[in-house]
Image (tube, rainbow, N blue to C red; front, side, top):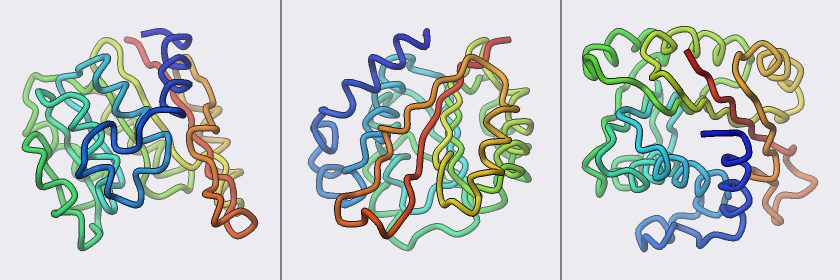
Length: 204
């Protein structure tokens, strides 16, 4: 995978169908965001052995990645799942949800995946700069020779942007900012900050 190929997937995700032609996903209000269609496309393109998502909440992104590569084990980790997460992720049999600290659960993940490798890591838990850095370091030993690291909320909320930008500068790999994949909903312009989105290709 190259940065140009990722940019092409990102451009296509903007105009892609909401829910990626899956009626269940199309009915979910969170599915409007292009970055979820992008994650679906990345999963479908690279077909990793394992996907790990740190910060699940409702599980809409988890479901998109699971749909994109049904033979991939998709592991979602969160300390406080949204009550609706089970209904959203339930139809996708390749999802495993782990309730606990995203960093502390790394040994559990290693036990689950054995010798399989993580090809896509999605960091979307606490956006304080320190947490995503700790998550990256915890899961890096399990990376495939090439791992796509996607990071949500690089720009907002604004009170955390400085910390997230420091993390982004520190994060290894070939990086590209794709903020257009997570715009502010038209109904929230002026109310919430531009979230931002970025991707790094980390190679051994």
